[in-house]
Length: 355
Image (tube, rainbow, N blue to C red):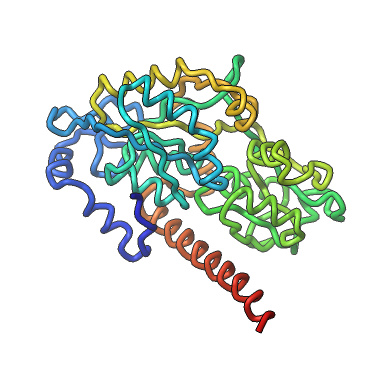
């Protein structure tokens, strides 16, 4: 069971504690790591963790654990990916189970600690997963022509007086989370060039997710929100919100969507088999509809497809390292605590009215 996010004060220490001493020792003689954590090595300089050279450190689990990014309701994705996990079980000959994670930090921690073998990481946290958890991205979902991309869409209510980016000065704008590319880093990189400085010209409020940002704008809780266009479009397609209730006042150039990644220390034959299973699979109609019309997985590499994401992080001086992740884990924990408090208050209100 993936445990809950640890308090930030002990987060880094807890991650190190989950690493076998032999693994840390084995990597101490590494000749090149690049941006990777000390637990990993990148001798071939492809920007992701190398497969361990010590055969005793290779893993061949009887059950494979899969988790998808909590960019929306985790339970929703558990249902949508069920046909694929059933196929993956048959294709690999190993039981494949879905674990729901409630935060990016919990997902990265699970792969780092060896409890997660295959994962779909959202665009920004992919880089943290690579550097801190030994994740090796290899695929992006897509259609017959190309892999899926998204744009940062700056949305407002249709009846809002806001018409341009400059009109957001003095307003309440929802960003999703500090590590999100589309929900935070890209806006911080692009908006100053449009004459708008986050935190200075407008108040940033972290919503905790793209769906929460969209729903918040829809309800009037926020004046605007930068969100991933693919999430926004899926919410419209599912009937969660109506397109006519929103206007998009600005959008970015395309970025890659969520990566699908393997733990770096899986037995090479198993890793190759999993990759082939992904590339051979074609989504059934219901899964295709739920995932924005995509019907397959396209090959991808972190070095190539995530270059624009790293460029955004460099532009806003947001390195994908441990100290930045510790700060984000603290924010995610605090946001989760606030949401739990709000739910408790909402549950108590009906009881108080009946007294």
